[in-house]
Image 1 (cartoon, rainbow, N blue to C red):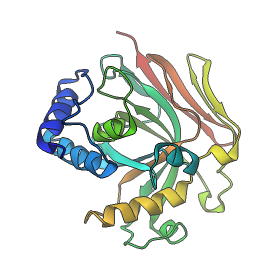
Image 2: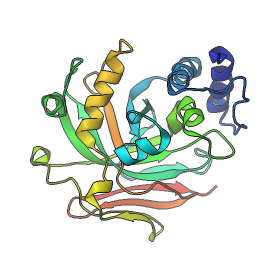
Image 3: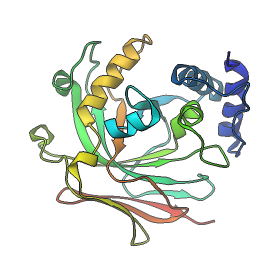
Image 4: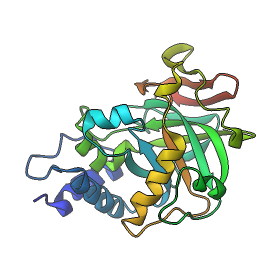
Length: 254
């Protein structure tokens, strides 16, 4: 049985001290997604960080099947780390900045358990273009369970422009490109490779309900990468959504 207290102590210390660590040893490493979530929850408590929303990762069915999960992987977005378009960070803030073009929502109200992809629409205040800058505390990339325990690689989040008329769903499936200093990191022109945005939100609501939690008004939820996540150590970061707009951030080298 995983020692949740000790595993979370190691991860929380790495987070608060901004240190890189080796993978959790075999006797502490989670051996299931449920164990990973237990460690994640305790890690968040031990950091003392305030949660301001949620991130949805592994957001396509193909990706979920690949890792043996019955749904996306959930983690926290943290207060003080949700930034505006054009945000400035430095290489002191991040270990391995993993750049992801995403669609985010801001909640207007709290949907109840049993929410469907259709019914959740009435609980959404706004939908936005965004960049997630995910980050890990491990020296090397780890398996999904260790990653999940490590606050699901939460890092920083850039909330961009609001999408007008989002209910018509025309914003979904367009070409998305990420760049660093003008060089392409990733591009996706396949609508099938987009995250299942509203299915993911409904999953999140019901996932939380099983744990006696719920989404709250003002919560920011990011719904998964629209193009392949790619590490870029520093530079001017862009997420370009064709026909919709661009979100930017700067990671300055120090």
